Length: 230
View 1 (tube, rainbow, N blue to C red):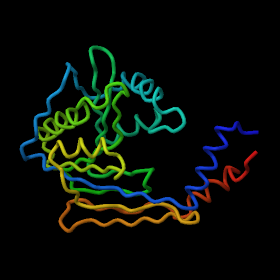
View 2 (view 1 turned 90 degrees about the horizontal axis):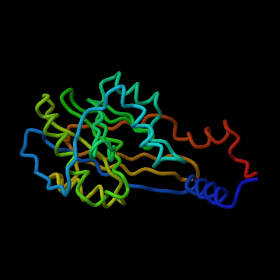
View 3 (view 1 turned 45 degrees about the vertical axis):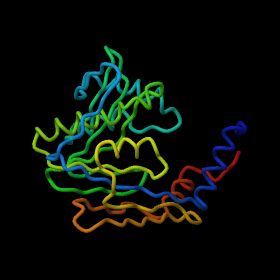
View 4 (view 1 turned 60 degrees about the vertical axis):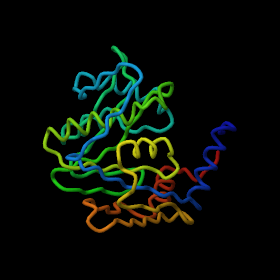
């Protein structure tokens, strides 16, 4: 039998399949423009993830994502193999944050869609700052540092996407100069059917495509026998 807390979580998941809705904002930053300088309280160091640091990254990740994983070790290896970039942020020797960038194209398993941009564009995703250091300008500082490096490497624009309810990410986005979005995605579930409604402004420089089945939740539950409450 399920424990009380586990049962409550499972019931909430089922209710979300019946009805849920969220809105995603898509942002664009021209990397050739003046990137704002972000003040930071404390000394941090930023570097690219190397293959011998994957274990440390996964340990940091697993400390914060126990029920749901952003990525696995295999995902990290695959991402690096296809050219994705991961910036690691340390305080001394201690890892305190990370941020991923995809080049040209990225699949979002949460949104069940693919973002596609030009050959000289990057798409930011999967960022995490250690809980006790949030609210200290670390995320916008990392973004600004990464943008400068990416600009020097020849990339001309960056895209990112945030949940409309994620106020901390929206504030960080605004600090980097993206105060208006170039598109939105409205998505969610109605009686188990996944609806996906992108609305991208003309000339935004990015396209979004739904990828998958609108009935994926039902298929997942049935294949794993998850419709049982026992």
